[in-house]
Image (cartoon, rainbow, N blue to C red):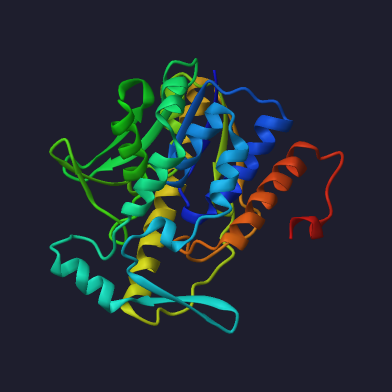
Length: 304
């Protein structure tokens, strides 16, 4: 069984979309299993349907308002670099309303339902492929994997939304008596789950560089400190997921093909910039092409 696994990574999901476009359209890979975490969960339904142009259009036009109905931070540009700081008014409003997070992402929930129709859901559910979304159950302290085959339309859309909710900046969701959050808090690169479900040949898109090229600048405010701490934790989880995935693959005689980002795309994946994400999609496509066609390498300036 061939599987496509896409890690979490917020706005960097545009790069994963480009990689997947090449693997499906040009390389001709046919996948029976799709497993995604966070932004990966947003991509896999349309990839499984073969509707790459549709998901590319979505990722090329998303911005902060598309994701947040109450954005907890302000983005400013200083010396050509995006900086974030707390939007004190929006955070205060959320706390006054009794919310448990700094911001709310109901707009993303609406986007998911608008972009994946009931007809597309039924086509996918009745088709030959399995599509699996990763979520973190904070109440039971465990990672859960939600297959489209076990869900209604409403449930499936909610699981995709939950998988993408990067708490505490996005919504914390209570469902089935438990509190759920971003799947990346437990399994940001779910290679092991793909193998457990029978995959023997796995293409994995990791939205991070293979080698750490970055020393973070000192945090300028509590908000930046919190994002830096969470990034550090998620990086450790990612490394662990990949190590375990390789170990299990070796035990099960499975093949893993890893596609890392060749450069640092952004230091804050909660910033959704349409122009940058459009470029990242193209870079992902060209990177996958270069990786698969080493006899005909592309020039570095083509990646810009």
